[in-house]
Image 1 (cartoon, one colour):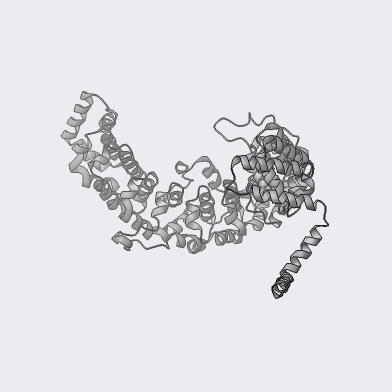
Image 2 (cartoon, rainbow, N blue to C red):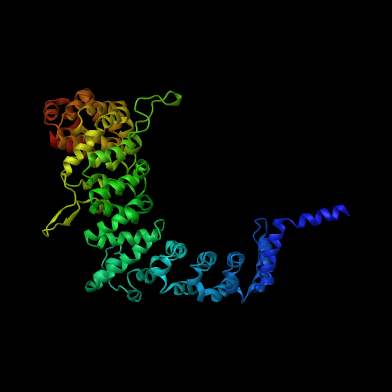
Length: 567
């Protein structure tokens, strides 16, 4: 008897009382028995240990139970997962029935905290047939802007535009960002306006070309959508990046700068995509000094990872190359690049620590920052850039108060580069001195070696020593001889004594170098680069004999012919 009273007392605990009250209230809600039964099946269905046959039986049982009631229970916080499971584990025929029941409410469900998970499942599992795709896309028609600026609906739009449907399938929906009236507009000339080698024009550029008189209203509509995205802080979504980037590429520079003031503090979130990188690069180009400093501040601590990112490095280079306050750039960005272990320190295992710039120099993207700073061309050195990079890094011009196009930066670009390079001079020299051999084996590293020949004479000997360290075979290696030749030819444009230093080291090995046509190409480049060396080789009778003998023998002789022409 005392034991029974003890159990009854346990059942009257506050937790049990609360649970009983909650159950009592739920029992009075519609479909209580149905939801309870379906949740029991869901509990079994979600087990990962089930076989396919068991899942098939449970899905059939669940389908029979909730058919015709899916819309009613789908937005319940405790039953949404039941419909999700039905979509995930059901057959294609059952999924089609679920879609038909819910298609009229998809837009509203997309804004529901629990219902939007069902929509995500529908997009994932019901997009395998053209008819289902058409139904889902039709459900979003006219609702894109509302959903894209809704804190929950944004997740659905991101998934819908992010891969389950092609750009062509979602193009009509994307045009709603520029005005509902353009959702029915079909750009008949979009295929003819781009060549096979260039990307198709963006939706905004196509609309502006087709409706030049409506350009102002289109851009205003886009700006209103972007303002709502900013207000809701929806920066992580890629569709938002694409919309902002498209606006920055077509709006007047003053409007771009104005928008940038609301966005630049969130730069790091946009730099995860190419579109976001484009937007930040545009903001940096047209922003004022204060906003450029805000961009730098938002990127502080991420410089190394951004430079080695697939796309973000371009935006970082852009802000560095347009910011007149080079001291701020040094403190916020360059210091971070030079902050790791100092060159020359001994790492674990007794090996010499890598120089802080080593990773940057060896990376094909990150190395472009060093190349742009080292290059002495007044114009942008396009030989190091692809078309996308060139477009984003070209000099930025804007209308001034007098209606004239002027640079958005006050300081001379060469002065800016010189100040930044002076700050990094000792580190660049240390990089080359310490890692010339590794840089020589890497395409991006070899370009940096070539650029240092005209900037820092201290590097010449280190480069030549590295070439010697590779052995005479480097002149026969396809990549090795090409890198050496490019360094020599670059030295011609930059001046300096690299050619003389090189010949002093290898003058006694000219015959070994001439064992291959590739080696002859290197000597031809040296003759073209350095008149002093040309004079010395001209009077070397043995060199001419070897060349003529190689040409007479036949085979691969283009290198020998090129060298003989120089002589």
